[in-house]
Structure formats: structure tokens, C-alpha cells
Image (cartoon, rainbow, N blue to C red; front, side, top):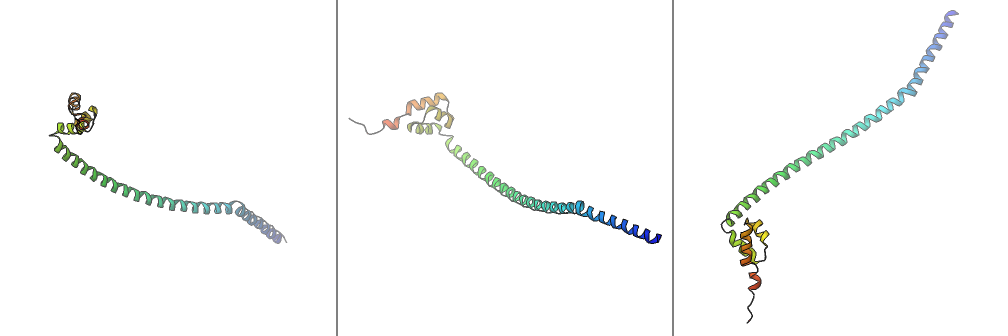
Length: 140
């Protein structure tokens, strides 16, 4: 009889422990497992989004590098063209100044554009400025 009493107490204690573990599982562990699962899914979606952004940034950087190379090549061509034009015009700044003055260019524009001094620009402007306006048909 004592044995059956001990066995029944042991069974009851074991039942209580199992019930406590089940309640612990239901109330604490199960919600935590659900939350961990949700966080893993969210982390996976963030990882996919970051991978997509990384790929987009890599493509953008590639296109940017290509555009920079094209721009550099274009700039080199433009610099060469400007140098060629400067070689053609360096020998005749006064001819250009006269032509510009005849078309109404101002002194500051002549000095800035052609590298003339203010005195040179003023002289060209005085001598040739307005000639195109006065060179119309002469009236008797």
C-alpha cells in the first residue's frame, strides 16, 4: 500500500511537472519560436532586398564608369579641337577682333575672348566698331 501511495504521488508529481512543462511551452517557448520564425523570414526578405540593391548599385557603378570614360574621351577630343582652333587663330587675333567689332562686339568681350588688352580692344572698337552699320548703301 505504501508502494502504491508512493507510485501515485510520483505519478501525480510527474503529471504536475509535465503539465508545468506543457504550460511553459505553450505560454513562453511557443510564442518565442513563432517570433524567431517571423524574424528569420523578415531577415531573409531584407537579405534579398539588399542583394537586389547591391546588384543595382553594381550595375549603376558600371554604367557610371562607362559614362565617365566616354566623357573623358570626349573631353580629350574637345581639348584637342580647341588646341587646333587656337593654333589657327593665334596668328590673327586682330583680324578676328576687327570682324567682331564690325558686328557690334563690345570692348570687354574683345579683350576677354581674344586676349587683347583693354587699350587694344578700345582701339579696335573705336576704329572698326559700327562699320557694318555705316557700310549700308550711301545716300546722295
